[in-house]
Image 1 (cartoon, helix red, strand yellow):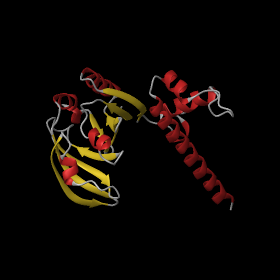
Image 2 (cartoon, one colour):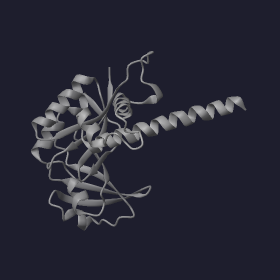
Image 3 (cartoon, helix red, strand yellow):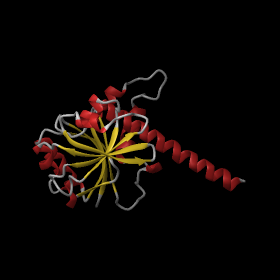
Length: 225
């Protein structure tokens, strides 16, 4: 039974975080091959074209050995970077291609990496999480959804298990009352996650609920007309 996960990684050894810490962009996207080759040092990085970041700016960073600007993709400038990779990173991602697959480019911020991956099962994810922790990389799970067949007990409105759990807790604790009876910090503590992760869960869950409700209403309006 495969599972889809959303999580954030944080560690001083994570590549490319220095770009968002020392240069203007506070968020970039990257594609890497670490799951297929643990010593892969080539990273494809996308930065908003409105932000002027040159090859010289990138090569001035300690971890960047070489930077080449490839061109443009939509509203982003694409750079090919060769990175001085920490040993811990190589070890963490070794053997990952057989148990996990990335669904989207990695999002890099000053806080670390955000990734969405499919794992072959829950045990494979837990092994990956343990490996991260053993090498000093903190993994904060945001959501986990299984791909098992739908049943009468399936979570409604297309929500993930984690989104449903966060929204249900927030509602029961009076988060949506006026004035609010609790805070995102208190809710995050109950769920055992960070406050930014809790906020992301609520935002994504609320968006999914609204999208589902509005699509349903649009369908009913069409039928009634």
